[in-house]
Image 1 (cartoon, rainbow, N blue to C red):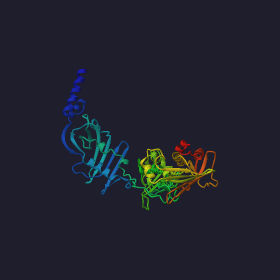
Image 2 (image 1 turned 30 degrees about the vertical axis):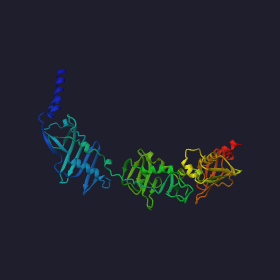
Image 3 (image 1 turned 60 degrees about the vertical axis):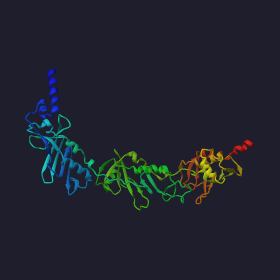
Image 4 (image 1 turned 120 degrees about the vertical axis):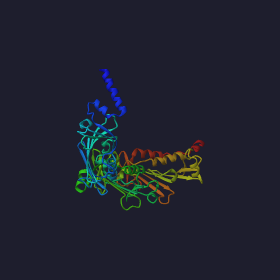
Length: 475
């Protein structure tokens, strides 16, 4: 018995080496009268032009037809087919060629052709119709049986029919492109949980004392946090479709996807100098693939990934608003008036060329060997300490906004004078709010809440301002 098995294996190996289909089939008990004819056999004929094509894989059937130079889905002429993808598929099918023809086949089931994995019907431009059936992979491997309905004939190809007709209708869909913008001058996001309208100013010197602020709430001129806006713009730039859902969706059908005006979130971007939007995307209801979405004015619905639009769905002007109590560098300061019940006036002066010296001596201790002097109510104080005390002001950050609230009786006022022409002074007024917060007015943002503990610590810092180190040593 072992000797017989070895003999069969040796014969099978020999069949592989000599490429003999008949020997392999004889070992399997198949009809040995099949004739093998090698050559080149164009399955659909020479210089074939395909006019229509239908194929079925499992329970899915796809039917395409050509009208003029355009392919369409039969029964749905408006379906957005990717013409290039369909044409590539059709050309691959038209050029399908077998390298062997088997004649005298009496048992097509031996080749997997009685229940084919894939069946196709091809209508040629001359009116002829051809049938194609995908059989099994040949025992030699890397070759495939193909039936055409010819009795007793089976072809052998190097290319599986399933690899040519592998695409679904979704994969043959022409997706709309989401516009890519070079620069955004205005961003508007409106929806159930979104309310944002921001404008960009390359030169913001006429709007605020801080030229580093470029994004502002449209019409209100409240500055926005540059990093927060950049993250939003990055998400807008990264918008991408995940999957195609449907076409021909309009009017009353939009509500089924949450894309109607009452439920959708619109993301609209304008490029500089443009009166019309350069990008307008509508985001609808949540779904298994993320969220439904579409281009404004389109009738095609897609999905977008949930994580890619999460920030857009929640974007508000308040969420991106700058929360700096004061955005100013120490080198911009000429004088500070600090009044928490005891008026303090801090004056900062530089000798000629001190700014240049300070710039070239960045590694030196602040205030040393730069010709910089600071006085508080006329008395010299330690420059490094004064600088840190000022930076305690600029480190204050808002914890929230309370629009409409006025500070009528300030507990602390800070007025900073600079050498800026348009904004020579910035005033901060702190008033009582609750046990944990002060309310701050600074003339730049709406009134905002700041930590009471931080403000109280700031007052103590300014109430004690030490003399310069060298004076303390000499005394």
